[in-house]
Length: 244
Image (tube, rainbow, N blue to C red; front, top):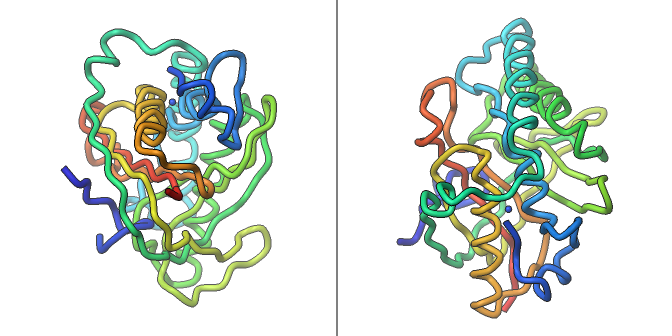
């Protein structure tokens, strides 16, 4: 099946990777665990903020608080742990490559450590959304996290939201663009703490297809956990720019 991905970067709408492939990925190798798996288990666990429910500064602050508390709980239970047998059997993914169009975004790029990530994401997503609302606009898709680089326990990421073209940033909120690119794509359905396995399967598949990383990958948090409380139904699209 060719996954239909969310408008945040696409058409209309992390166990371990193989060692030699992993060495070519910008995130490198962290203590025997792939960089993407380590990032996914620590970063992707938090619940993205509710976009449809945020209607002002007070709502944003409330969402940030819920996000941060959820993130810390998820971090304690999922960071740097192996994938369970249950997760291995539960993660059912299909993969494809697709030429995807460019998509304007507004985001905040930040350097941080693994330990600081959960709290940071709540702050950044809330700030970006509030800024978009202050411009009289709304995001045109769901929140996404771009993973730019990783070295040791530090990483550089960008919390962003897709927007209509022509909206300028201000201060640390910058206007950017998800690139038009050939991408390896997969959709994960399930809790965020199972994303390490999804990343690993994607990078394994890329290697098997002779695809090389060609840019910073990102995750799109398609499901609003506030609207769908069952983690087994949460959808995350993973996108990895590649070259043949």
